[in-house]
Image (cartoon, one colour):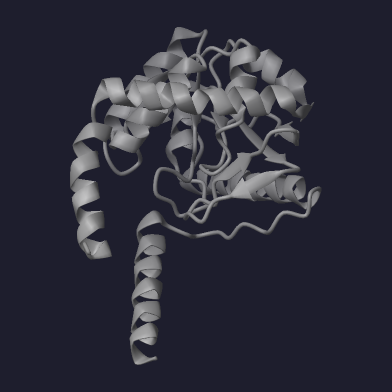
Length: 265
């Protein structure tokens, strides 16, 4: 009998090169899009403050949402006729998600706050300066800390003059995954509630203190926005400050401790 650890190592070695193949990522993206559309069309949708979305859907604007609350925004964006680019990680998972987003009409800008930040800023500013496209991004992605607004979106706003628009959704029937970002998957035949926040502007001559004040205010609003939506359906409170690396480390430690406990018995 093959030891579980050996099997996982072999399985990972086998699948990693395949997951990096563009054609395979497209196939996976198509199969992921099917249940998203099924969930969307079988669910009741309630979108508040949608006038803001319609006003800025074809203008330079920065739409921000928590990393764990992105999936069901895709069909809303698609059917709403939004013109935008999405900031995606260069990692193979990020590239696969970029292909999924492409199926919903979003083009990709590859990079993150830790890798490729300068190129992302340069490309994002070019997109915003075109005048007819926006940017979609998760201010706490791609690896956290969760529910913390990093500076990227604010730099886009400060340098371009475009507004930041915070968006969030929740669902009456949902599966919250055991991940650092507590990724929420809406289930079919749900009630999906989405809220579009009012535009937030960052003055081009904002001081460091003013910049930080706007960042903190945006973060506070987005956390409140999500928790008020989740409270409507009694969903658990999502924690702040979780990171992908720390979450994985704790999971490994917990698994090792459980294994040791079994050996003692």
